[in-house]
Amino acid sequence: LLAIVIYPVFATVRYSLFNEAATQFVGLSNYKTLFTSDDLLTAFRNNVIWVVIFPFFVTFFGLVFAVLTERIRWSTVFKTIVVMPIVFSTTASALVWADIFSNSQPQVGVVNAFSQMVSDWFNPPGLYPISSSAGQSVSSLASYGLRPGPSQDTLESTSVVRAGGVIRLGMIGIQPATLQTLGAKQAHLPAAAPGSVSGVVWRDFSLSSSNTTRPQSGEDGLPGMRLGLVSTSGQQVGSTATDANGVFRFSGVSPGRYRVELLSSNFGSGFQGISWLGTQSLTPTASASQTAQALFSVPLVDMSMIVAYLWIWAGFAMVILAAGLASIDRFVLEAARIDGATELQTFRRVTMPLLAPVLTVVFVTMVINVLKIFDIVINMAPGSSQQDANTLALSIYNDGFTSGIHTGLASAIAVILFVLVIPAMLWNLKKLKASGY
Image (cartoon, rainbow, N blue to C red; front, side, top):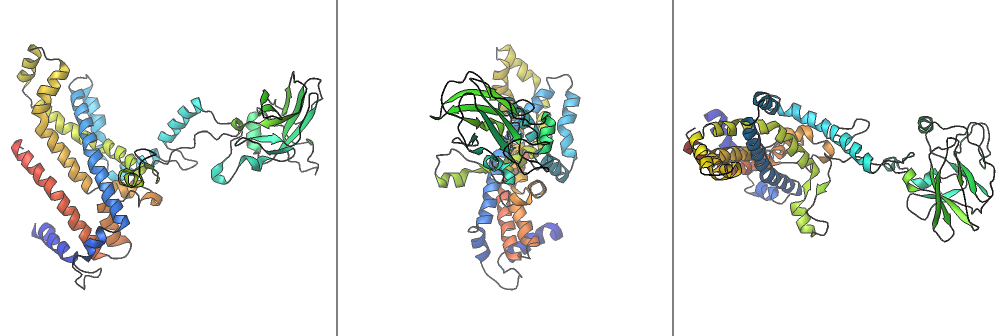
């Protein structure tokens, strides 16, 4: 105890009052840096988020699971499934959950894959999606006879057309693999038809000819392209889609001047995934003040790691609370039911008060656990968002060992963390003693 506990405590306090090399006394300078550095204030904020959110939810889920183990037939299997994650190391669990929340192409994690499936039901992507992350825009697809439309992410014909006319619309930037998937065929110019506006939309690319004003041999039509017929006043008067050859026709067109519009639904990329391990934050409201947003914003990476940590520790909470439930006198519960109490009333008025000491022990134990949270952060948060997910324990590691030796600052952080843990530790020991453990 003297070697691994007492001496390190006093040595850490001493080093916190010295400079980085521990050669010059600087007093409380390291503590001043600790409470004025933006990076370390972020670490404080994240520790507060962990302490406020995680112990409550892990205790809640542990209680729910403990109650379920007494109500379901397959309780042994259920308890095995819930407890199993605690067998794995936190590092291994963090790496698994990093893959689950991943949004890096081409490997998409389970969460984003499921979200994409649901999103595509309600907002299906277009047949010709553009990739804004690759610097692509709808306007970059325009070739012969096309220009950016008046609406966002649309293209329109550069020339006007009347009933009985034929219009040609060439596009570039369409991948051959996309056309192969859609079953595209050789594009050709349709014949004019009275009372109709006809035309073709094709991939304007040919190795055999420099003529870009009409489809050439080897140039495929763009099948399934959704089009609108728009009057010169901006009103859409018709809609259609191209066939496998890229040919389209608007029938029953009234006299007048029109443009053909390629609708934005053709180019929608659909669900692009959520960067659960990125730097985005959950804020109270969009109208909240900047101060409120700075104080209460919760990075998504923190919430993702909390979910992973719940998966790890819910089994521990369940085991402790299940033991507490098993120790409750069943005659007291029966007496409450005989007196007419419902199951919910019995749980609230009898079970919860009798279980309160055990609940407190679990809650405070989890508070101590997350005050020194480290391993899941360093292994689960990617490098780009690790600073946003920083905690006090991770700051001790980073400041003390990785970015040069900052003995004084790292020691000061360790002292503050030690001071924060002591009250929770003493409270937990008191409750354990009162509970007879």
